[in-house]
Length: 379
Image 1 (cartoon, one colour):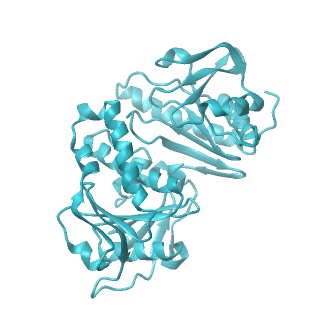
Image 2 (tube, rainbow, N blue to C red):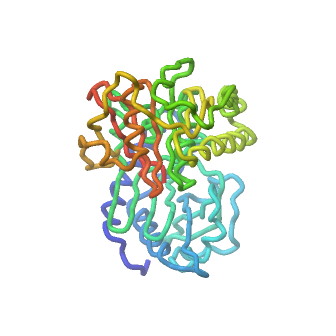
């Protein structure tokens, strides 16, 4: 391909190839079928290069948003195929972008002879299929579908300008890592409990998407202790608890495989996530019942002010650090850290207007609040 080389694309390509090689081999050993083909480093490098330069091209005043899936059309259910293969160049990709901008649609890319070509578009792709998504100019995300039709794609690497972040899968091996983080890292099992966690993943994605910032507090069902950390009265207390999302999550696996259930889940998730845009915190229990929104957090009587927070990001090479909570962000972050310190069996999900996303959880190993920076996993 006669396009300029994206900085570090060769190093990233080798790392990504190793990632897919390891996961596809493990899936085959487990007897999983219908796996996507394994990508090679040269092909990955070529896709990164073309996608990066395509992301910088403006077509009719719009920058392209594109998702590419690396696979031949015979592995796709009901592929949309072009009569003639198209060249895999930044110009072609930018012009095709409006046709595949909606979520869940991918341009199909495969190597024919020595050249990559665009053969059409795909909606349903096999598990562990290499996907590269152009989010905005200069921002690329490499990811794959874990296998569950309704689950969030698992991110492998994020490339933004000259910054390259490779997701550290070992971050899920920490003894007190929340299952939500493990699910985002692709380390969760495929059990019903993993499906339950995936709904919190979708809540996080939806919270981040509305762009207004917000806080979601997750408390144990049946416990009233969280009330000690909330200033009363709450302007938007919900009675009885709103249970649409909870009822959907109680349905069996046979229902969850159907498109109507997935669509209903998406709508219910967006309802709850939308409430987090209101000033104050939204509260749900760990069984997805909505309890309140617009709530103000206060220090529990007899509690201590949070003084320091352990912060980590699941990215290769990122070091853990202990910081004062005010260094994490504004009042929303400080309040969330205080809530988790006082209510140690809870979680706090905090979205910032600038796209940052933090999950606060109590760390028994460290004896302090642990702030997990996870925006790299949510793109």
